[in-house]
Image 1 (cartoon, rainbow, N blue to C red):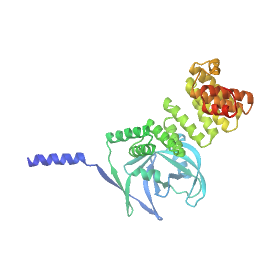
Image 2: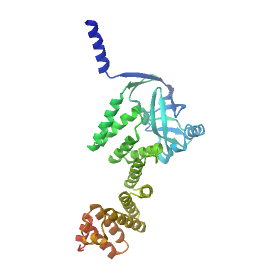
Image 3: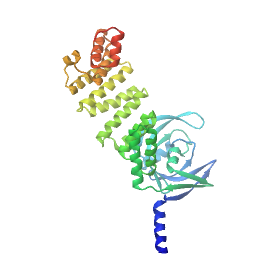
Image 4: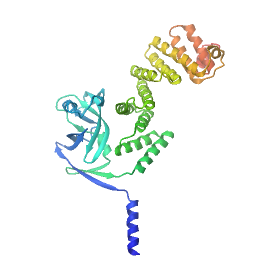
Length: 362
């Protein structure tokens, strides 16, 4: 009996405990810091373990070597940018995606990094990877990584929690859960979209665009529905940051892709018109809002006569006519006022306020 009880107690303890392990990486001193051995996309390197650096960065010479030997591909290149360095100066860099950084037995997938210009540029391992290692301690020259092993059920629970947190508009918690998953294994295509959208909801637009760029590099047009969501999200991020021309570029890509979907096409042209108006390009704004109104009217199955009589009450149509009126007021006062009255008849509050303020009957 005692032996049987001992076996059951041992089994219960094994099932109940959180499985943890340690991995020890030997680093080498480098001034006041350490260099850590790792592989980047399969290339063996030693990167400076720098908790003060936000990202991973490599030199132009290192990037050239990786390109020439197949460790980097053209599709891994994202965009040009600028960043501040330790002395406070601003330098240009190229944003890239490193598909795999391995430290010991750990693999961190799809890491956003920078190629830095200049001579004697150090290879830095920054917080984007360091945070992904989880709990760590440094003992002399030893980096000790305290690993927790998660089951597929644990990961699914985190993913389900993230979905519920998004529904509850708790975007910070959702981001944390998605990043926890990403620290253990690569996020799925859908999860990357969720992460990008959460960042945008939190007004972290650069982070959102970074995840969008990562998704486009990995999946591109291979997943049609998610590709459309990404195009719209990228355009929206640029629009909010007042990069209207970039926003127009991506909305035009979306309009072309969804040209057979009349509702999406009309809303996208409306967004394009709004961006052109923000740039004071009224002529192009009129072209696109006219197309948006015409297409969306067909979606509703409403005739011009019905709309002018005020028989059609539709919030979106009203907002489109309001933008149409705002454009025309810059060109033709009478035509602009007429569009404002139509927008008011559709129920648009801005147009109703305009008509009341200017004593226009509708």
